[in-house]
Amino acid sequence: MIEFGLLNWSILITYIIANLILGVVISKNITSANDFYVGRKNTPWWAIGISVIATYVSALTFLGAPAWAYKEGLSVIAIHLNYPLVIVAVVCLFFPFFYNAGVASIYEYQERRFGKKARGLVSAIWLISQTMSSAAVLYATSLVLAFIVDVPVVTAIILVTIIALIYTMLGGITAVIWTDVIQSAILFIGAGIIMYALIDNLSLPMSETLTALKDQGKLDPLNFSFELNEVSTVWSGVIAMSLYHVTVYGTNQMMVQRTLAAKTIGDAKKSYLLMGFLAFFIYLFFIFMGVLFYNYYDGKPFENDNLIILQFAADYGLPGLMGIIAAAVMAASMSSLDSALNSLSTISTLDFYKKYFAKDKDEGHYLKATRYFTFGWAVVIVLPAIMYHLHSEGSILEILSKVGSFFVGAQLGMFTLGFFSKHTSEKGLLVGTACSFIAVALTAVYTDVAWPWYCAIGLIVSVSCSIIASLVITGRQQEYSPYTIKGQLEQFASSGLDEKEHGWYRVPGKFDKINYALLAFFTFTLVLMLTFESLV
Image 1 (cartoon, one colour):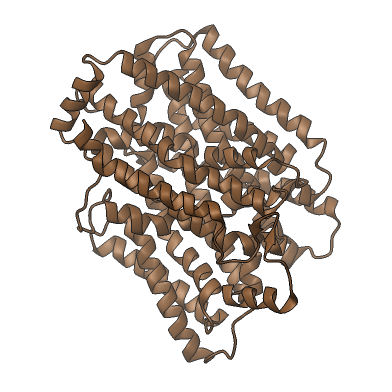
Image 2: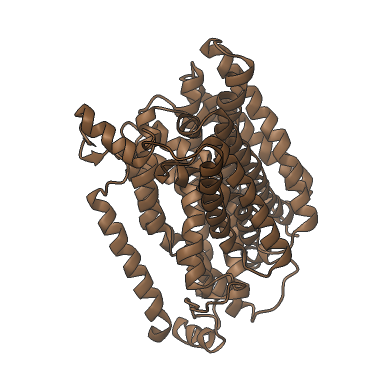
């Protein structure tokens, strides 16, 4: 424990107050439930893009990526090579369905494609998985506060939840986006200071440090092993984790909802493309930091690896640095937590409350209900966060990925079948989804297959079993649903609708020109990592 001091407290408190004030200011423009869900369609694409980055990077990356790389080395980057492929898939396949439909809940697509039960199922799956991952974010932040300001972990969990809850309840998705922009700036300022201080305090020049790390096997970024029980391989990163991240970015209400606040589908796509071009460098930055920490501390074991970056900041002793770091990690945490609370309340209201319990009420009623649900989900998330605290010592980034991997295969299977399958029916889909869960559970319990492959296993089982069950139960269908990709293309062609809006495709399955640049960027990152070790 260290003395936090007046300067550090001033920085942290100023940050907290600024977030609350922003929530109050934005709340004046929230007059309907739809304003809460998707704003007024006037948020600039770059702000949405930064919000997407801030939400997924989060405190888990700030603390967890260096911790993971400290243990595994640069090979962890293989898990994050896939973002360009992922973003291309999502903007080409998913966005046109969501944006053209004008929905606030992306799971409304499942009802239009299959039926009410399918929508209810995928919504329930997402509510459970998002609650668990948001709890991991809370746990990450509690470690920071417990370490640097001597606040008990459980108290820290409650305090961070209350702060994020207040401005999210007030300002909805617009407050989420703009606070994320501020929070991302604080996050990267803090990370930049740490990296500068770390490089400045290495015992050897950078060239000699890298040579030493290479000799210790810490700078081999690409592991081409075909062993399915290894986590950080090229194949798990490019194949298995591509599927995992397509689910995260394409079927996750928390990630997609803010893009629905964009003015046009082009702005929605640009916000995601920003992540496609920047994600690799962001994760490489934090992973490389963890490798340098390994050299700085001579690989000594820590009681909790997630505290390495905080221990270094404390050892460095720059006045105000711990305040900036505390604000940075709280910023990273709340950028994820506020998004989760907003989306959890949106799905609870639209997919369950409005649909089954309170039909045909006015907008004021649903706005009030959404705020009540926001409060309720904040209370619910606290419980698993405390469980993480009691039972977790590994990298929280890896822990979160493991938790998510149990759910994503079934989610992706439901959307894949919706987009491409002619014969899948709702009854067959429900059977296939159940089989997917069973297959992943059996894989986790009875094999040593690494968690990145759970999504691929769940997807394969979901798709194959759903199609077979559909053919057995309901038989072959005569034509494609209008909510498949083929059906959408036929609708646009027959009705004479323009396939593009301001130069961007509105129909699914079509490539905008910039997507080719993103694929070229993926090739560049792969070549860079292939040659990295030889350049040292």
